[in-house]
Length: 426
Ligand code: PLP
Image 1 (tube, rainbow, N blue to C red):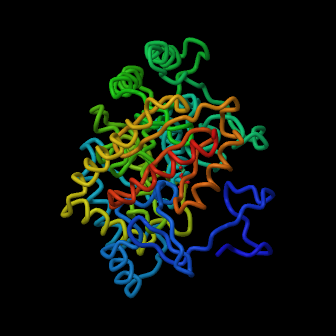
Image 2: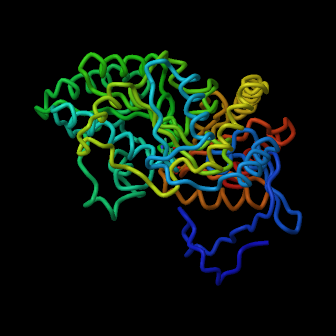
């Protein structure tokens, strides 16, 4: 069953002009999504990278139900509630010690906006204003104006380009070219070209998601972090996608021993059940805003900041991480992904097979690569018709399932990928 053609809903990242059916989903359980008529799909991309332990996880649903009977919403400016307090305390406990403050928001994009404003606010409030931001080529940080500004310019944001602010872009550390990236970062931090020292460098640690599942080594991340530290440039880790186990460890920065100055988390923060985000920062950033002078206040909020029900869902997620074998599930999924990927790795129709933790990706060899490759809509339709929710990025097919996916379900996903290669080229 699909939503009707005269539905008023305007869907995100969806070209309604292609006339593709839009399946109506009534229920989710584990790695599966069910239509009202019982038809079902395996959610192989965790519903846009958010669902970690599975859809409608009983413990998260129970926490939501329980909290909804106590307190649904509270203005968070100058007021607080227990779910936010315990969540913040637990986040501080599980992240590196220098991160001491937690600022709540409600999406990955807003967590990035908050990070950028924290960085600029820090420099302004200590009386040494800086405004330039360094970014990594091919990055994606969200779709609000600030988040787009620090992301790759291209098809996602072309019409809005006049509104986007200028950034300095560091080349992506392709294999063999890592030193060029580090040299460019060093030069940018030292303000060799611009004359002004940047406020911050924002980076997706270890893997660039929407940019095409581009992986780079932990030692490069560690080097980038120490270059920023040496030059006093704030280091922002956007772990909106990489956080909560996707890359094999709870946070990608853990693999590089990197402690950022600012850390953005969202998506899997609630296990993927409700929208919530946090931006954590080091004490000096908070201290720069701590003053009897009201002009130094951090002026950022949205109505639903730290919504109590979303915080309760996040607390349940953290409990699951505490007392279920989440890491073991991640390790098993990572191994299974590696095994499936290795079967296709030598296929001549496939290029750049790659994996980081639970995320596996490959490029289909086509003449017209890139995000607008005609292959993507055909593949999406093919998978939809074969019971799998996959959403290739151009000619890049990736699999990023919830950790509860069964061996049979994962095998079905890879069978569909394999069959799609025959379909496209056969
Ligand atoms: N940052 C990264 C690395 C992301 O992958 C995304 C979304 O995919 C975002 C930020 C934006 O998050 P949201 O879609 O929740 O605004």
